Picture 1 (spheres, rainbow, N blue to C red):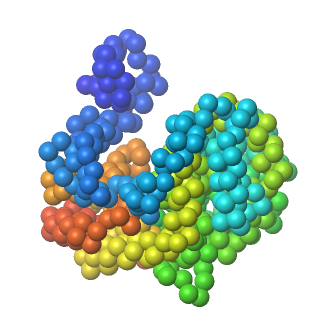
Picture 2: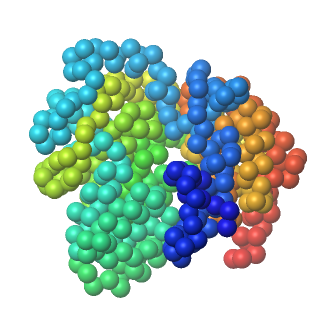
Picture 3: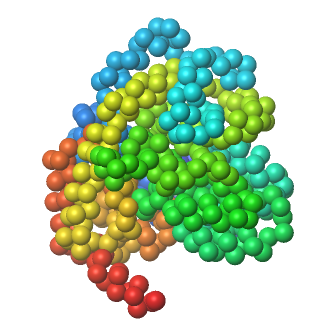
Length: 439
């Protein structure tokens, strides 16, 4: 097999056949498609040399960026950028303490404002969502049973594997299927039950039927743990005068679904909509105090840079004054793309209208060619290759932000039209007919 660990991000040192065990052969074969793309494709592991708004330069190519997760455009917002120097003057570039040893008041200010925005009992901020999953899921699960959404994000899955290593059992329930979760919980004798799932899904762009899952979890005495990395900042509470179907204030999937925090723990991040290196868990104060002495990131991790804390605090101000207008702009750009896909009869799992639009290919083996075509047309997207997604879902993900322009979106639509003409994308009508036949 002509492969080596260098194609997977390790030093390009040949691995002899005698050094390879069956586990390594299996791993290399499983990741072959992705490793080849990473090694050769201009949109994988790319070095971005320059940015100009949502236009990026990779080498000699300028491309419209539809791979960013900075949904509100806060990364480019002049008000936020210009707020940072004052914080640096006051606090330096980086706090030198773990939070247990010394917690700058900036953290306390963020938690107070975040708790008020979310409407939760309390909240705790830590550096990343991955840190939270790896430390908090094992604590909440203890030696009980975790019920894990089969399509939950890889970082949630990894947190559950840490919990399993510490004595918890893990059961998988079918994606978007609260009835299956109900069945599994009804058959479970273990009294300690934790249900882990995504809020807005990072590939489909859809939010779960949260009230249905919350009802099942509460009825069976389970704690519901929701990772809403892609929903926080984008969707929020519904009102009669909302500026878009995304709702108001961007205070996450719990409020958007009209739910309470009774029996629900919410995890989210500022690294997407707020463009800052920081994450949070919204939880009861009693749980927050436990995490302060039991969660490794609070005890040991280096904190977020002062610039990130500053952008969160300034971001709260911008969100209060201009956030709903930005979300309305984001909705309009997203609707423009989705309307074009409907006109072109292109399949996408997105039924929410949220700014994550997955477009699967008709033939998964064409991922390299389609990606290169888009690159040459000046379009930058997230390639979804196997094994990141199943082979029948291989394609690319388009992410809109409020900083994209109508002109950039129209450039994307022209490229999609050409892909349809080339026969590279799936027909929505054919897919719907296949589903009806299967039913």
